[in-house]
Image (cartoon, rainbow, N blue to C red; front, side, top):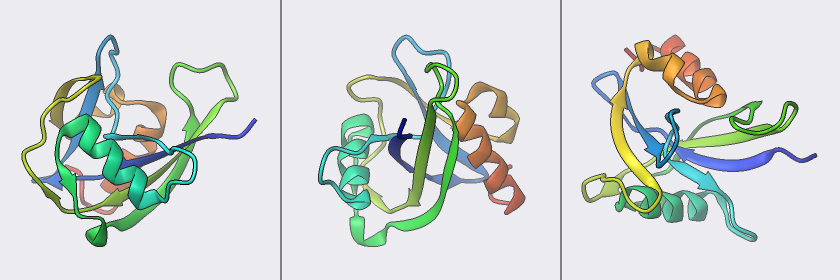
Length: 132
């Protein structure tokens, strides 16, 4: 079974990372989502962030942070998610849109509140002294 292919945005300010919680969920995720057929990473990033946060990503500023894999949250054991993460500039003020109920800035102390793949990303960012 192929892993779930997702693209996510990493936005860090003052040692905290922008995270989202979808309606009906109790776990936080980095903003982003699944690639549609034929989309590039930057196209997926731009579309998903506009849909979830109502902001316009500048795809020319996208920088690859890393690609991370873990058990997919809410899926049967053995189903993996592969999350390719980018930083990128944006225009507008992030706000919850569509299925997103809440947006928050999380620190490393919030690691237990995020999905399994996000925990790996939190560890990666902490090791680089980017996440407080």
